Length: 625
Ligand code: WT7
Image 1: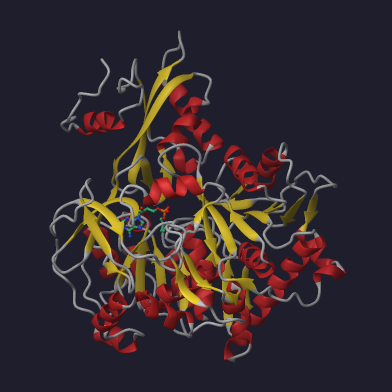
Image 2: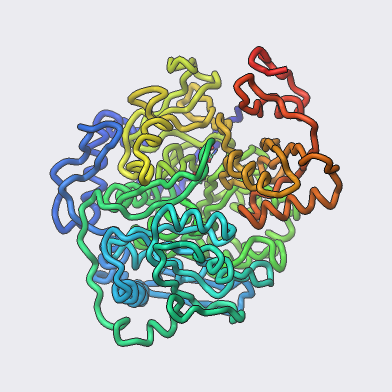
């Protein structure tokens, strides 16, 4: 574990939190007072009666009795002060030819338009709306428009296949789907609308599909169901005020699907009040956001990082958020650095996998740009190896901008382990539990292990932005997160704590694989592979990969009388991309005669992993044959 790097004085002088140890202590002694103070920085149309209602654990409720709306604080609040004409959102297209900017006032207008359209379609409080959009401003408008009228958004990453989209639309029983004619990916068009057509063919709940024009691709429109967004916004119903519905703090804001270790994806449910307080506070303190900041989170709004720290967090703090349509290396590996320079990005938040990928192109791509606007950097999604950390710190941040690693999950909604700029930095460590939180490393009996020992990471305190349940599945919520060590939240990660109280994340302990920071369950990947007609049985595991962190390796037993070939490998990989997502494509496929299983028929992935890595396979007493 490497030496700590002292915080830079200039950064600390500017920071909201300089005396972090004092705040950490106070928040430890009285977390609810700490959260109440943070919540009081925001606007509520009715004050809360109780900060935390824990009478029905683990179904915690926050700020009960309070009324607000996340849009009241992310947008409306800023219209009353000097931020009204300040830029809220800046967007640039993949090819760099289109640029769109929105002041808070303009953003508010756009959100009202979209909200009026949804209302006119009969969407009311509590209805679910599926959003399947590229990284264009409309994805932000759509999320905020749903929130504004109390509808529950379900954003699906616009790289998911028709199968994956369809099962998520059906599970959420969405009435409306918002999509685009296509999206740009490295200069070519990805047919979003066509995928939606396939996905909703058998969805009984979908009444309307709203289509934003983006690529100009020719598409089929079903006149009874599909509407161009630009036609809708030209109608009189789209004009005029749309008041922000005042909701109970505990009213649902969104569901977001994420992978678990078994079975179908889980629908994580977040609510207005607590999520708002949690994302606002953590972004403000960890990234030390001020009014003049231009914050760029490179995540897609289809993941929790995009929800919390691209859309909601920055707008709640009144900062300017930057949205870029494309990826880091198209057309050249300095695309991101060029954008940082062009827009004067001050705070930049990305994933270790992207840093490792860009690092491989060499320093010259970075050095040809003026990155002096950067004052804070951040990472998320997987452990950052010290080599990547140092490259990010030295080459991108010029040894001036601290690197804030942030450990959290779709379920936690907000950072759980992170730093603040005034804390000494330890390259490779995620930092310390955020103010008001406490974390422990335990063994499988639930006993706290000594510092420096690897164990399971658990969280001790409830926190405002915690998920409230799994949508329609309270039992799985309790079972997955709260039943292993009652009273403590099971993260599913292995980690160590050092003697300074810093946490070092090792990785998942369950059948979840983080590939380039994306979360995949072995079960989903295996079912996509097994749906190929040549496959009789399969097992998927994650193996270490230099850039992606982990890569998927699949073992396949072919249907009788078939033999493996290179062509078949490619065919199965493509099949996975089409039936789940390109992210899930296995790097390698091995054709095998049998798979290691327990006597009860469960695949022993740990045996496959140990064999692939040339490690000791350990206890095989449960292995059948
Ligand atoms: C899993 C959650 C919420 C952010 C995006 C991922 C891993 C996340 C870190 C980090 C080491 C990390 C964990 C966690 N993870 N951040 N800073 N250092 N590991 O959210 O898709 O729900 O995945 O990502 O394994 O459990 P997610």
